Image 1 (cartoon, rainbow over the protein chains, first blue to last red):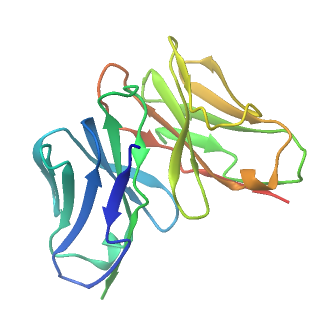
Image 2: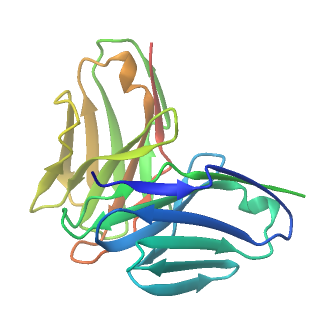
Length: 111
Length: 113
């Protein structure tokens, strides 16, 4: 069964802390997405990666293909980072257009 | 300009009714999607569609059907609505032929009474 597991499910941090959210998957993938869902409900794509590491501002995403694991890091966290972060993978064996989603990590950053 | 727009944002209706949610993208993408987000915030693909192929998630009841009048639009029709259809429905688009970035609409919250 193809699964995407995220941890932790909930995370509360103080402003300024370094945050890590993890995503593990079970079989080979062609791409992994990190998405952010704001409290208002809208979903924004943060990263799409298939290897290595990507950085955008205070956000860093890494992926280890051999270990089937990805991490999303937020440096110098801020209350506006409070959102649900969702990992999604595109499996190598499946349709190129099908994504399987993790259950999300609810991040709350306190001032 | 909104890249992917959905209407309506909120829809409240009675069981048994038929309803539609519209989606339009102005990004020039050739592939569009419908996702369902349940009460636990879990996202699941329903359909993906371009002018070559419709891929349907086999768990989606056939009361749900996508309709695409052109590349920029993918509407979602739901017949004989049931209580369990209450959810937030997200439209998204991407460029086919790439493991491309997804652009999401704002979501449409459907409540079936």
